[in-house]
Amino acid sequence: MKMTKYKLSELVEVTRGASLSGQFYAEEGKLVRLTLGNFNINGGGFKENTSKTDLYFTGTVRDEFILNEGDIITPLTEQSLGLLGTTARIPESGKYIQSQDVALVRCKKGLLDPNFCYYLISSSIVRQQLSAAAQQTKIRHTSPEKIKDCTVWVPDFDVQKNIGRILTDIDNKIAINRRINDNLEAMAKQLYDYWFVQFDFPNEEGKPYKSSGGEMVWNEKLKRNIPKGWLCGTLLDIAEYTNGLACQKYRPTGENKLPVIKIKEMHDGLSPDTEWVKADIPENVKVYDGDVLFSWSASLEVMLWAYGNGGLNQHIFKVTSKNGYPRSFYFYQLKHYIGVFKQMAEARKTTMGHITQDHLKQSTIALPSNVDIANKLEEKLCPIFDAIVKNNQEIMSLTKQRDELLPLLMNGQASVNYHLSAC
Image (tube, rainbow, N blue to C red; front, side, top):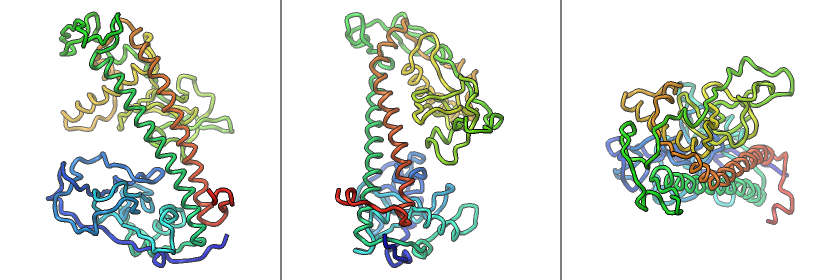
């Protein structure tokens, strides 16, 4: 495959966004200001920023800074290590404002295919140049000029289009799987809430308990009405919480090993940076697909693990059944109570450092009089949980394929064969 050397300035226009005054930041509005939080540092792509509430901008903005669907953006500030060179596509026209920390990249027509450009900017060859040229301050910066000064090698335009389409198809499939999982998770939670938050589980006649006049009784400890016969319990009544190991004490000496699951892996799945632990660690700290994990330190998150067997690191609990309560029941009870723990921290105006067994013991939750009710819901939710895990496994596999293909296609070591290019 023929590759031609260019400066990016010959192929693209790169512009900085607007300087937006903080006096016009708002929690409501029509226009959203882009921030570095809109870049998904793990795998690239656009994500909605959930870390701030004042993301709307109510001041005057020039039209050139209001972006269109499909526009390519890249950060100018490295708020997190590795952020420079990350790319994202704007998902909707007329909604997002390009701020000064964000660069807009536009391809010169007929010279660079937009899909190819999206992956070229995020390729290792461009990232390395941006990193080397970044200002060496605590938070590193780049600029439109430094981006345009990067040297790249690109194939003919038709080949660019084929490469861009293949990589985009992989990313689209990943996005579809994520949307399916979002819907599955919403369905499962809605059904759980219907049964165990609204208390409309099926009564003996198969009718919704509370809506059909089922007797409710005030519980002083819970400070609310619960179905007659139900009890007030704790998170320790429904599940066991097994803490992980200090895995640095169990480094492998051969190939018989497992990946170490830390909070980073809970967020992002396994990566080349994932550490390893001996495979002969105790069974109770081994993790398998579908296990419930709870990061009790710092992030306070609950998830279904989906990325293969591993060894659990300290700062994470593996949560398993106790007293016959099924996975879906303790999963959602714990997810709900994370909100309570965070409210406690907010009330103290501090960050909740970690959750201890005492916090779990002091929790208060409503427990059904018969665990069979929870098991009946488990029968409905288990296939949904299994589908979510399967989709996440496919996302990991597709991401690995894309990340392995990207450098090979970008540097000409691999080419698109006839059958793929004809698709």
